[in-house]
Image 1 (cartoon, rainbow over the protein chains, first blue to last red):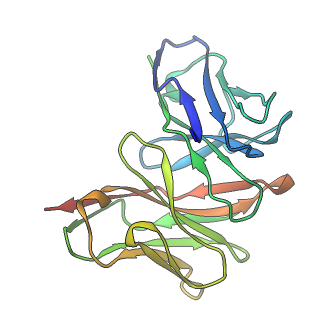
Image 2 (tube, helix red, strand yellow):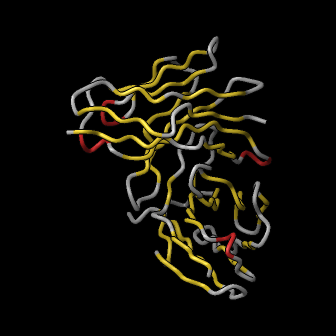
Length: 113
Length: 116
């Protein structure tokens, strides 16, 4: 059971480039989300999805797009990378239920120069 | 809106001594609270969760946390630290979004260092 798989693990972009961070889960979880982790700030929610075809914004959505065409996949797109998007990105999924724990991927470390 | 404050950004203890990581929360109603651990270059892993069934919650690897409503605290403890406990720890409160999804509000994190 792979859980939540994120690719790539590392990425370096130049300002203005675009890219997609991939996230896939094999637990049939309805809910998926993207977080960014910055030093001293914990994790902040970028976008989330409550099921295939349904997405919504979190607290820091600007500069990112998401889509959810299948239950398994939840890619995060950077349309025009900026240095402020240098961060570690985590994808997480969880099952329905108020106390369901999140299952995290191992993260993607992105540097924008 | 709910929030959580971890009172120490860095805690350092000796191996075999007790661990205390402090967390205070702010919530307008009965919260769902979690502690997650992050080892270097890894994703986050759930340590324990408070679900209102019991105020003392036991988690994995010998950790436990006590929910104190009067103090709005959810401190994480372990009687005897092990070298493998060195990691970053996050206190998390759950907010309910539309359609039943959870929004987790993370504390800033506490880095735990274990001295041999």
